[in-house]
Image 1 (cartoon, rainbow, N blue to C red):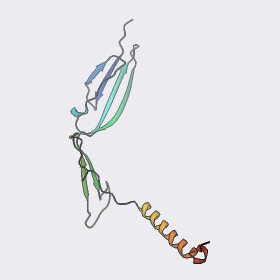
Image 2 (image 1 turned 135 degrees about the vertical axis):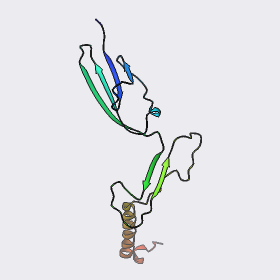
Image 3 (image 1 turned 60 degrees about the vertical axis):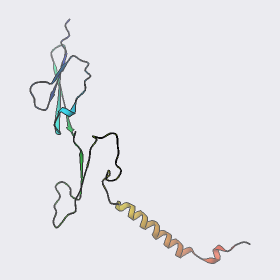
Length: 140
């Protein structure tokens, strides 16, 4: 009996498959040859009886540096002047790591400030309510 099982792999809406294999398939997808942005990998498999199955996998390629923007969000309504911080992270150099400027500066979260204020407030309350020199007399 002839084994005519095939797996064809398409990228985006290209009608011509960029790869065709006999299952099981193990291959390396080289994203350096794919432009940055959203893409779809479509896998078409044919069984020995001729039935076809299709699986689509959406993915995003980002070979360039990652860009981080603080100060404005997508779809945000703004007015006045807005300070914006832009940072980019790339992985082109593997032999050296620059610490300064390698992280995007973020403000301390509000919940941390609330926790600190609560702790200091409780300490002040405890100190004023329970500080009595007679309670702390020495036994000697």
